[in-house]
Image (tube, rainbow, N blue to C red):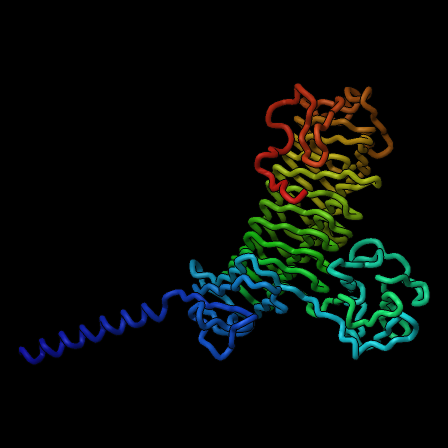
Length: 471
C-alpha cells in the first residue's frame, strides 16, 4: 500500500510539473523586431536578439503575444500583413509600433529609367499594368507627395504630355504604360530624392482574422491604404494609429469586417476613412485633415459611428453616407463631432439614397447639407461664412430639433425658406420646434469655437473632448 501511495504521489508531482510547464509555455510572449540590427534567425524573445522582419514575427506570434517594433532612426520599409491568423477571446495578438513608421515607398532605381530628353526620364516597367494602381499612384519629390492634381476618389486633372513637365513633376502615358519624371537638366536622377510607392498597404488583414490590437503605428507612402481590412474580421482594435500621405484611404474596412478605432490621425490621404461592403465600424477620437477625395465616406450596408472627432474638411467631398441601389441601407451615427471647412469652395455633408445620418452635438462650419436619404439632426450648431445651405430632396426624410442654424436658406424639394421664413418652415414640416435660426459668430473657425452668446447649453460639440491637435 505504501508503494502504491508513493507511486500516486510521484504521479501527482509529475502532473503538477506538467501543468506548470504548460502554463509557462502558454504565457503571453513579447516578440521584438528591429529592422536595422535584427536577424530573422534569432528567436526575437528579447530586445537583445530581435527579429528583422514583421513577417517573421507574425509567423511566430500566437494568441496573447505582443509584437514590438523598436523605434529606429529610419522607417520600416515593410508592411504588416495578417492573413487567416487570429488571437483568442481575451488573448489578442498585439502589434505595438511604439511610434515606428511603416513606409511603403522606395527610391527610384536610376538604372531602370531611360533619359529621353534633358532632365526627362521614362520607365515603362515601374508597376504592373493596372488602372487601380495607376489611379492611386504618385511620386515623392524631396519628401513631398505629388499627385499632379489626381487622386483615387477625387479630382483627376488630365495627364500632362511628357514635354510639358516642369522639374518636380511627373506624368503617365497609358498607351505604352510609361511613367515620366522631370528633374533639373544637368542633374542625375540618382542624386535627386525621388521615391514612389512600392507597397500596397501599411497594415492589412485578409481571410478570417479575429482578436487583434494594432497600436502606436504610423503608416505612410503606400499606394493603397494605410490600414486595409478585408475578408471576415471580429474584435479588431486600432489604437493610437496614424496614416499620412497614402494613395487611397487612411483606413478602409471591406466585406464582412468589424473594426473599432480608438485614436486615429489621418492626414493627406485620398480619403480619411472609407468603409464599404457589409463592414461595421466604431470610430472614436479621430482627427482628419488635408485629405483629397473624401474626408469620411461610408457606403453600401451596415452601421458606422463617429464620436468625439474632428474633420478639417478640405477634401473634394467631406462626409458622405450612401446605401445601395438595391435597397441596402448604410447608417452613420455621429455624436460630438466638429466638421470645419475654411476653404473657398463649397463642401457638403451628403446623405445619398438609402443612406441614414443620425447626428447629435455636431458643430459644422462652412458645410452644406445635401440630402436624399434620411437624416436626424439634434443639439447641433450649423453656420459659416458664407452661410451654408440645406438642400433636401422630395425623397428625403428629415427630423430635427434643438439646433442653432445660421443658414443662407433651407430648401425642401421646391420650397425655399430663408431666415425670415423659419416659422413657416416649422409649420410646414413640424420640425425644429426648439431650434433657433440666428446669426452665429465663430470665435476661431479653425477650432469650431462659437463666440455668439446665448446659445443653449449642450448644443454643438464639446471641444474639450476633441482631438484638435495638429490643426
